[in-house]
Length: 111
Length: 117
Image (cartoon, rainbow over all chains, first blue to last red; front, top):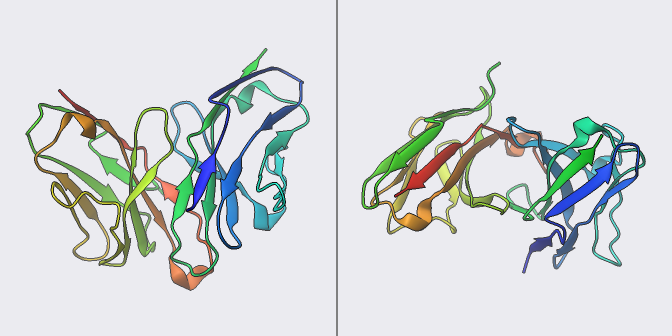
C-alpha cells in the first residue's frame, strides 16, 4: 500500500543551524516524491519535487530508493522557514495517480 | 489571479444538518480535487474531477457526501447529514490536467474549516 510517514510532528532548530525533515515512504513501483509547505495563514503550496532536482529557498531533497526516504534539508535555517511541511507521493504509472500526503512536520526556527 | 477560491472560509453547524462548500478553480485548470484534512494530519483525497467527470471518488463516503462539477468549472461538495467526525478542513485544489505532463502541480485554495457541534 502507498504510505508516507513523517516521524516528527514538531521540530525546533535555532536560526543558522542545519535542518532535516524526515520522510519515508512505501510504494510498490517508481514513485514521484514532493514536499509541500504551508506558511502561517497561507495556502498549501508545492516546495519542490524530486524529479526536478532543484534547490528551492535553500532546501534540497534527495530520493533514496534503498532507504525509501526523501528527507528535506537546508544547511542554515532561517526564521521565515517556520511552517508546516508535508511530504507527498504519487505514482508514475499514469497522470491520474493520486497524491498521498504524510501527516506533516511543524518546523519552528528559533531566533 | 486570485488562485483557487473557496467559500465559506468557516462554517459551524449542528450535527445532522446539511452543509455545502463551493470551489472555483484557477481558470484553465481541468482537474479539480477535494481533500479533507483532519487535525494533525495531511490532506486526504475525497474526489478528483477531470473536467466534469469524477475519475476518482473511491475515498468519498457516498452515504452522506456528494459532489458535482456541472460545467467542468466550479464545484460543490455537500454533506448531508453532517456528523461530529466530519469536523475538518476541506481543501479544494486544481491543476492543469493530463495534457500538461505526468504530474501537474496542484494549487490549493484556502480551505473551509467545518465545525460540527
